[in-house]
Image (cartoon, rainbow, N blue to C red):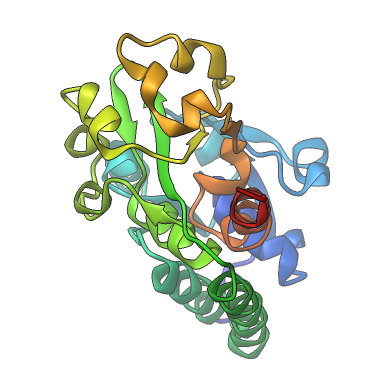
Length: 267
């Protein structure tokens, strides 16, 4: 560490990498997650040292980072291993839209860029509010089923559920969105989706390609309005399942465009 703030940062997830690039502080990044796709130059320019629940500890140690940034209990074992090597580790654990904005401000503080981070968070919050206002003017709100995984079926995590609401829809499983762990958002009875009758189905299978035809072919699902009307869409995991700037911008915009099209369609 040079001076008071870290200069060699390893990002074990995508959202901190994207945030540092947006802050103009990407020169500090010395290692990234192998899943990183935003921004494209990160994948081109930075060494990939981790998956989501595993990491090359020896390679990270060799990079001599003065800070490693991770996310949630799923990376706790990686964090512990790095801590045993004397490396400073911070695990973010946010699950909501306000939490995403808080992560950006906190990260800015950790690297001595509070003002830039506050400005970035404010710009993102303004963009979210613009979508909220536009969505409030739509003539109808669709019921939305968001599927995060297919086998077993897992419904939307909290920030995705919140963004569905901001985009103009109503999450079909709001009670599950409050659960931080994926295993607690499993839909044990697939017919429960049928009973909740979503008008739109969004799929984002954690990086695996969404197959709407497979969803439509599930037993008993043919009567779901979204299946009947062909309203099944993929939202790429890179823009919605990382709790960072991408979800508040491209992910939200994609969902809002689909919801707007549904709401404004003549009936």
